[in-house]
Amino acid sequence: MSDYILSCCSTADLSKEHFEARDIKYVCFHFAINGVEHVDDLGESIPFDKFYEMISKGADTRTSQVNISEYVAFFSKFLEEGKDIVHVCLSSGISGTINSARNAALIVRERYPERKVYIIDSLGASSGYGLLMDTAAGMRDSGMSAGELAEWIEKNRLNLHHWFFSTDLSTYVRGGRISKTAAVFGGMLEICPLLNMDAGGHLVPRSKIRTKKKVIREIVSRMEQHARDGLDYNGKCYISQSACLDDAKQVAAMVEERFPKLCGKVEINNIGTTIGSHTGPGTIALFFWGDKRE
Image (cartoon, rainbow, N blue to C red; front, side, top):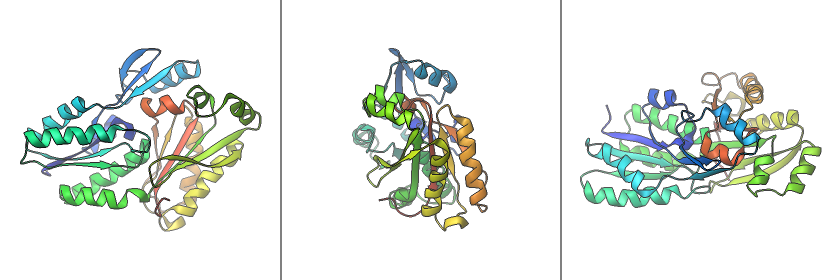
């Protein structure tokens, strides 16, 4: 057993069973739907299908990050057990939660001066962040110390690719990220924006592709271009999806066909309620290890 714990935020979008099996601790974000506050507890408070159904019917959503006092309480229970902490946060490019975590770390370091607390920016999100955590858990289990693991994550995090597309732009309109006019024309032309996460952990539009069929082919093509060892890629591949499981299965089947040396089957997860509050239904994200993101 290691002398430290590995932890992250619920926005890594893995299942509770996955977190527990890999011994990854997590702290929960918060969201509100139609003014009712909830914990982003991996679909326990509101099942994902119900959550996305409510959004598709026009429900208003808001999210809030883990605050300093919540981080202090979360960290303290492990520090009291004599454990050091390696905590990895949701990308600073889309959330300020790392600032709360860093401030909380200052507080607990004073209370537990003999312990070490490492706070790391994942520069990732959803199950890409989750794949980073899963890989880090393997490194921990191989015998890496807390300091060595923190250094490894910071050195390798930009090799974790995040590619996204969306077939439903209505939530982006409500959130003000695209105009209603652009969404109408996009819908008429069946335009599906393809985005990825850059080196700063920001979501960046890369292409506007007509039809879902073509964007599915294109997202797999991006994996062919960027995956470690190309078509000989032998790492894990994760997908996260928001109420579009059939589309996710199409992407997974194509990936498994193109990359026969994959480490196991493609794992499909739900986009959680925090990130899903901003994407709405109809988003597919593909994650894999590859060349360094730009």
